[in-house]
Length: 435
Image 1 (cartoon, one colour):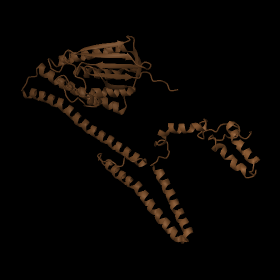
Image 2 (cartoon, rainbow, N blue to C red; image 1 turned 135 degrees about the horizontal axis):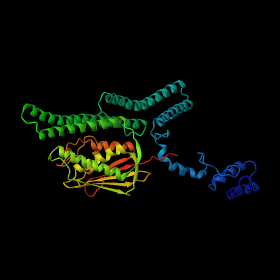
Image 3 (tube, one colour; image 1 turned 90 degrees about the horizontal axis):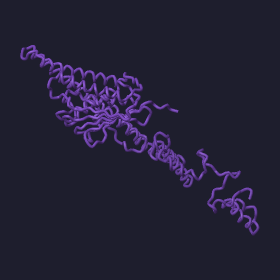
Image 4 (tube, rainbow, N blue to C red; image 1 turned 45 degrees about the horizontal axis):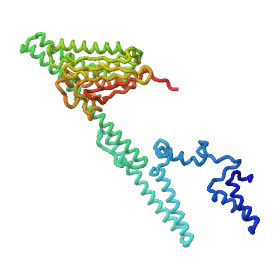
């Protein structure tokens, strides 16, 4: 009774006493009677002192809860970040190689002892079998490494089309092959974007320079007089060239990280109202400088909606000005004649955070192209008379807006809209202190 507390222990001891009182001697019985105590009841014997047996993992819970923990964490046991053995990992294969070699050697030794075969023959056979198995396993490990070395050399020489086979392997070599292929994809994309950037910049610079040169050559050759209309045309091309250079400089500063954020608290209504007034004034000035040009959009109405009116935010005012101004300019370009562009501002989820929406009444952006609208020099696939590039746009405005939002740690994207295009911007506001 004192050795095994609990009802299960009492039931296990009963038959043992009956056997000893009957015809069974006392000496040999105790070892056999101690075994059925857990076999008959199916309950594991508690540890000494009456306390339940605990999980050896160190969690402190009962042992019967151990399998639940193992099943719950099964997804992380095979990950590469845990250091555990996976069913098809290289560690497992090497372990199996050692086990198989030992089994072969042991089996041959047993055969030698039973058949009185000389030990030297068994030693030779075991060495040959072990070498063959080792060669087979080593070839499976070194062949993918040779291929990866060849592909890596090709990538280092600029051949980003090479890929490593065997990325579907379920071991460390498969992980390495997948990483090399992803690296090749990224390098190929960077190289493609670099070539597109050079081509687009060359095209954007060549167009206004060629137009300005043609105007000035006509004036110098006497083909056209240096009247105000001709000078306005030359000035328009010069301004377009200046805007392109300025946006390229902004992107260069953003890429190099030399534009630190100077975040401060400000009132949203007067701030956005000033941005909209500047946009209207800039459109009017472009209209005056270009005469009666077809590309001037002074017919679009800008509407501001801030709720609550006393809304405040915490952000870099200069960088946010770039975001709002570029988004408004893009919305105006795509708006129909006498259309309307609405700028909405709402309080975000965090302290001093801000949610912005810029809504136009244009044709909208197709779903397959929404992920590309923030790429540099992207002007859409179907420009309209009032669409991208129709008034000297460079295709860099949305890229600058995206970079400025990223500097704040916010998000920008194209949202679903019944009519027109809806771009949403989320700024996090004051960063929360980490406890």
